[in-house]
Each structure stands twice: as structure tokens, then as C-alpha cells.
Length: 259
Image (cartoon, rainbow, N blue to C red; front, side, top):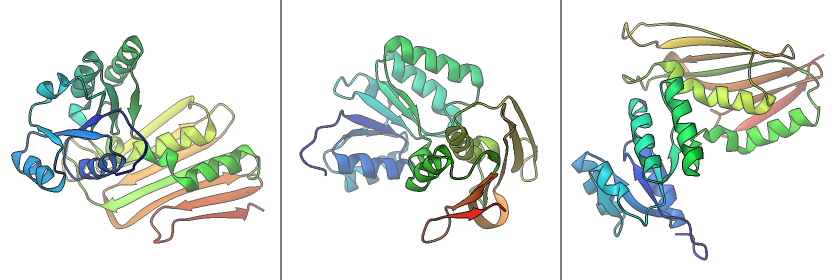
């Protein structure tokens, strides 16, 4: 644990594949007070690896613990809204893994409720805090690339196939959040098309196009039906281009002249 600093105590909801990463990191800071999961096997595993942590298999029981100031929601996407809603009602701060909700009106409801309750509501758009993205934003803002004409992002892999949400909800939030952060504005027009192959009700591949007021265009290609893994963001300016490759063993960003 990190010594010398006290953090508000949190409970991680969901001890699955990504939840385990959050549990580990909050434990290292000393902020982890509890873990909640309905799967008894996962609870037993947490008890073994993190002695002294309070364990819950019932979400509402956890909400009555006044020492827990915030909850970290790492459950399937379809459960994000109801869990965050109840947590905010119980005056807990909320960190919610992306997406915040699968419905726009639900997301707006959570935002309004957080403001009313004066509680933090944060979505886990972790790429915004990646050192390379922070540096890329600096390069864009200081004008090194010139006027940004075009951005494209590919997030491709073979699996993991979701059954709760489609590929757009599962993969694209990372790229959308980064592009909006880099440009500092909201698009005026958005289109998205996709294909359903493994499940007729869930898109496995989507291509989204974003148009911005100043003429900048962006497109996002995401797929979990791809023969190799690729996570690459390319920014094209009228002076220089920048490429961020998040798959290479040594994370890299390359800047080249456009002309």
C-alpha cells in the first residue's frame, strides 16, 4: 500500500476480468474497503488475495456502509445505469466503467442526479490519461501539427465477443473520448454503420464518422472479428502527422511532416 496519504474508502462492484485490475490498484493506494460481487467463487478469491477487505454479495447491503464514500462499477454494461443510480441516491461518489449507460436519457439522468447530490460521477475513459495522449494533445494545442484535417482510429481484435452490448458500445468509447478531448469540441454530425455476423442482434463491426464545425473529420473503425490486434490513432494536420500505436511492446508516437 501507498503510505503517508489517506484516500476516501471505496467499494469495487464486480470482480471480473477488468474489475480485478481495479481492485488491485485501489488496494495498492489503501483506498479499497470492500468488494461486491454476486459470484461466491469470485468473493472467495478476493478474500484469499486481499485479507481484511469487506466482502458483499448484495449491492444494497453495501450501500448502507457509511464508511464507503464511493463505488467503482465494473459490471456488464447493461447494469451500469441501475447500479450508478442507486449509488448516487445513497450519496456515494461513482466511478463507472465505460459506457456510462446504453441509453442517452439514462446517462443524462445520472448526470443530473450527480449534480443534485453534489457527488462525483466519472466514466472510466482511461486513454485520456495515457502519457502519449497527453503529449499528443500538447502537440496539437501548440500548433505543431497545424490545422487538424483528419483523425482516424482503428481498434481491432479477435474477441472478446460481448453479448450485452455491441462493438460500438464496447470498443469505440475509448476512441470517441480521446478524439473529443484532442479537438476540444463536439461533432456537428455523426454517422455509424455496422454488420451483425455472430449474433443477428449485436453488431460485430462498426465504422463511425464524425464531422466537426471547423471542417475536421474523424472516423473510428472497431471490430472483434479481425485476424490481428491493432490499436492505432492517426492525426493528420496540414503541417505534420502524428501516429499513436498502443499495441507495440514499446508504446510509440511518431510525428512526420505532411508534405
